[in-house]
Amino acid sequence: MSISSVHNMAMPNGASRKGHRGGILDGLRRLAYRNPLYAYTLVGRAPKRLFGTPPELLPGDAASGQIILAGNLVYGGQRWPFTDIADLPEKSSPQWQAYVHGFGWLSELRSVGNNPARQLAREHITRWIDSYTKWSPLTWQADVLGQRLTNWLTHFGFFAGDASQDFYDLFFLETVKQARHLNRSIMKTIAGPGRIQGLKGLIYCGVALPGFEKYLHNGLRYLETELDRQIFPDGGHYSRNPHIHMEVLADLVAIRETFIAAHIDVPAWLTGAIERMVPMLRALRHADGGLAFFNGSNTGDPAIIDALLSKSGVKTRAISSAPHTGFHRLSAGRTTVLMDTGSPPIDQANKWAHAGTLAFEMSAGKDRIIVNCGMPEDTTPDWQQALRSTAAHSTIVVDDVNSTEINLDGGYLRKPGHVTSSRREIDGSTIIEASYDGYSKVFGLVHRRLIMLAPDGGEIQGEDTLVGSGGHRYNLRFHLHPNVQATVLQDKRSALLKPRRGAGWRFTCADQSIALEESIYFDGSRTRRRTQQIVVFGPLGETGANIKWRLSKI
Image 1 (spheres, helix red, strand yellow):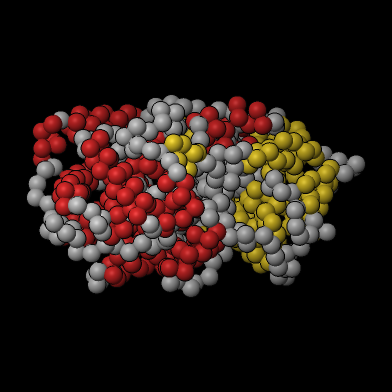
Image 2 (cartoon, one colour):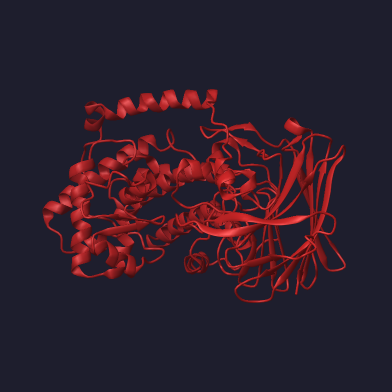
């Protein structure tokens, strides 16, 4: 399948009753929030100082701060002029604008640390208050609002040290106004990790603002409920997205560190969530330090991940099996295999769902060999659809149909009813056997996949089986990292894979023909990197198909 055909594989986009009801309620809330009388209820007494400023968990990047001082802002691979926060570029994406309004970039200016950076931060905050003090959907969205309050309070000592009394008065009046709205709306609007971001802001207000201690208690009560809902017993986040998992963990560690700095007892349930999430995060990394590409994740910054793990204080090693979240990690020698063996995320988390059940990634040392196509932090709806398709993952595709049909407005039109996996060791080799019925409703087929990693990591044996009599043709896809050069040998049954560094590998499929096709790779930015994929293809018989393949280190 070519790049263009992957891009054209669209997913159905229908409306669900649940989404319709939610849309009506959201519309009514928006009408209420726009009412001048509601804005009046947010006005009240404001403190003159802070109890203290929450500690900065991870420092910003001084080079990025210099770019901001020069009048530009980079996020998600996009670089746009950023001289007036009240006049953002019309063509900039909602994701870029949300980052602007969340003020996460204050850490970059703080890392520069000079007077021009301090003054520019104050100017943007003052201009923001002048322009956005009235409720609007994006700027007052709970996750964006929570991030803004978090960053304003965290970096207050940096930007307000030599500020005027007028700035202090303006800042505190606006901060408590937003805090009141967040306290009222957080559990009625956004769900998922965005709610945790909002609750983090609410908790910070309760810790830092005199007279607002009630918000701390509310935030903790809500957060405990959310962690019960969003964090599985094995420590995985219910989005099944490694990058979101990392971000949620960072929020929880930051909250814990804020409590410690403020001499507030850390709840046992918060400590427990962090202790479960850390070994899961380690399990979802390749040896290059980056994250695996499942359900919309991107690589992330290995240095930031290392710093977060260090800050967590949790020394537990990576888990090998996550039965609740649905991942297996195989590791031997210098070889790592990460396999998705879980059901698609539940409806509330389907925003991040990909149709990549039983897909896997494989790396050798710091070289990624077999990958999924990934997802940039900020991209167009068309590319989102293409990159969420089954064809964008290293797994089998039947008749170019997605194994899960995702309703982009919420929920699923079709998804697997049963996904199973087991793990065992035989003579030092690790074997994962998994199956799912994502194609049963449309073709009457069940996909079974077996992957075995040799004790020394020098060989991976695989077997993919389609059981049933439906469908016409299969394509078994192995997407390659852009740094891997591939050559199909004359027998059309094997290919040589040469990474930029390290040993080469030989891919072999004894009974079926293979081909090299174009593919694409996104590592987190909007930049598309051209790459290749190995495709094993053939017809489906009366009893399905059985494909045996092997990856051997040369």
